[in-house]
Amino acid sequence: MEWIETGKVNPGEKIYSENELVQIFGVSRHTVRQAVGDLVHEGLLYREQGAGTFCSHNPKQSKQNQSSSSVIKGKNIGVITTYISDYIFPSIIRGIESYLTTQGYTLTLSCTDNDVEKERQCLQTMLGRNIDGLIVEPTKSSNYNPNINYYLELEQNNIPYLMINQFYSQLMPPHIIMNDEHGGFIATEHLIKLGHEKIIGLFKTDDLQGVHRMQGFIRAFREHGVTFFPEMVITYSTEDVNSKTLKQIEEFFSKDEKPTAIVCYNDQLAVSVLDVLRKLDLKVPEDVSIVGYDDSFLAEATEVKLTTVTHPKMDMGIEAAKWIVSAVENKEVPQSKVYEPELVVRNSTMQLKKTSLI
Image 1 (cartoon, helix red, strand yellow):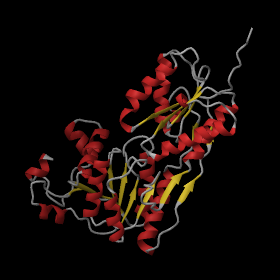
Image 2 (cartoon, one colour; image 1 turned 120 degrees about the horizontal axis):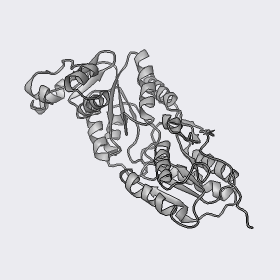
Image 3 (cartoon, one colour; image 1 turned 90 degrees about the horizontal axis):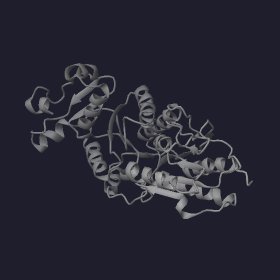
Image 4 (cartoon, helix red, strand yellow; image 1 turned 135 degrees about the vertical axis):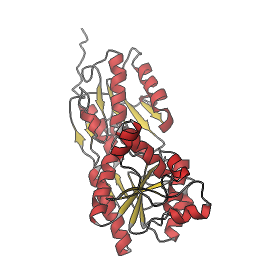
């Protein structure tokens, strides 16, 4: 920011590479990438695929100068995700980028941190960049979105956009998503078939993915005739996953009648639950079986390999890029797509041992 404000880096000039910035500041590559990503998100920098990262404008310039210097010319697709640098998102982004590059498109990337105000800023930046198309992962998709006007503006400007992982029901836009209801169902059904009945489900409910996975969880109890109790479901929002949810898990397992299995919203949460159970001296899967979701790299990153539900990740990114390029070049809206999930069974689940009555 200081280099931009003092004129050490001028609008249109390329900044140092990530490796050079690592050496200059003596920090990790991850830190550099995050910092540069923040400046891209704020519109002070922009990326050109195969060329590098460039200065957009000086924040001390007039608003008129800012807008004129921040426009990127050429074939450009905007991508807005909830997160960039962790979990399954790098794989999705790599898929998008790999296809766009072959078609001669550049990618402008930003993230919302699942915050609607940051989403508004991202949308404003994208609209100011004269993008040709936009791929969006919705922010808090189960709630009413206050940024609907920006999507309507995209439509009025004939800029195609596609939503991935979920979509805003108020808009019913084109989308590429998972059948998350079925994913929640097969995860829970797997445990029921192993003899588990005291199963708790942990679901994030400010995103529709979690709502649908919870619906699948409940359907499995209904279809298999297993008694269901409301307290078997723990819901949480983006902000309180670590504080609220993990504490509730500890409380559940402090009771006399402990659950024998857990269905988690995703692998990330499942790994955190593994840590909680380890502190309580409970073994997985001997004492508790766990199922994750997304088949991320985390599923095999711990000593307990997670049974989990697949997510197409890289393939979803490629399909999203193909969709947006087709919409831009053919001026036609391709069909939406729904991926059917599958269960990957590893060693975090096992047949429930029947206790003796003697």
